[in-house]
Length: 586
Image 1: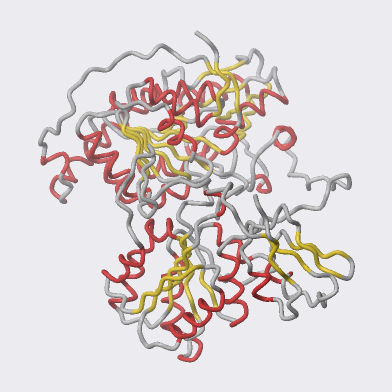
Image 2: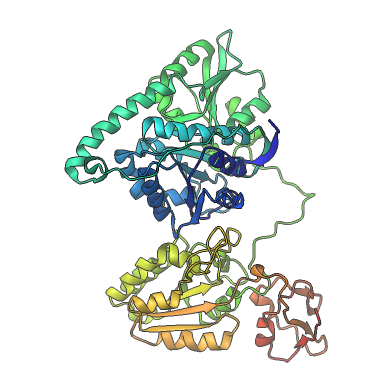
């Protein structure tokens, strides 16, 4: 077979396609996004690919398809599993007929996440088997194995990958695809699929029996195997995922028990390995998941210093873990340029919204998306960020306990994709309980932070076909919001007037600030602006907007013509008429 250079995400998508997956669904979230995009990019008519409004819906759709005997791939990032946890735990009771593989893409180091939770704990908590690849080849192989295991044990199988596995590329040898001919139909089984207490109690017995069978499988499967079998009692390592690769790099001759099935753990085999090698070191990222399980089984083992429980591992850190040393502070690199914090793109429509919020001195509860960058200098006007949809709930909670005058200084800020993901129920709470707050929906017509994926408001599906476009303004009106305004985010003065009007009302208000993401159409003709050096008083008002196109040059300000996106916010702010539009033909 011809080898292919693939990322872990690409390998998972290819394996799903060659395992006769009938459906792929999920919600975009770094580092998992490319899996479904790659699967959709194959253009296979026999594979249904869809973005779901959120992870809970994605898993519920996947479970329904698996009830009909289909093989399904459901993808999300680690915090997405929190959203999907409700159906996940009960589906462990019902089980599935077709193979259902749930990909959780964890993010050690929080490259693009609000926490770095270790989702191996979900496997033990939900009693679902988990596979953990350590390379692109294993991402491919383990995905194929996961579909088979799911059907063998009639259960969801969790495939845990991490940022380094998702995005790193290595050679993969794909297997020949075997066509899977089976009918897809739902067979009624009320005792199995309807989880009222009487049925659930019986299914819990089935679950416990399944756990015992899976534990037996873990003791024999080649997913767990020993590398460099120990000869003399000295020391050995227990490792999984990318941590295994680091161990092999820094200690290539050291005996390693490589764990590919991280739940249930093969405790009897681990005990035998420990007795053979003596000193057992558990090397794992984030929490002490395996170490705690091994010690609970009475197996002597040592883990890492507490300082290693944050962030990604690397060869240097693993070397210190093997030596029993604490983590070392990162070296100071004087040869590197100063770090560049992330900022909103030049011309981003969100920028003018935050300019007004800062001018009015409002409390802004925030959410997950590009606009979270409004918390950073020089905008510095986003006060909370917890999880998808929390901006609305946080604002409602503040409003209900602070003084009446202060409650009129609170606004919630949420994006269009996040609004459809988790904002609807918050609006229902506001309308039902008589809130008088203000919600700002920053509608840039895409899921921008994860790379521009479609959602229910864009009018397109994952496969590019047209879809019914859902208007967040109309949704809010339908839910009972009487005061709904829609305006262009570039209209700073109009937005300021609309916001003041809504804050003065004794009813719930929604303002949809609409301006398509600049990255959606990079070739669109846009205005350019310049600064007249003689008129510029260097007051710095334009610089406070944080536009990357504006540069401080000694005693004056200049606009980089390449970076200028033509939003006109600086033109609108300048009190000295020092900024003018440049006529362009491009």
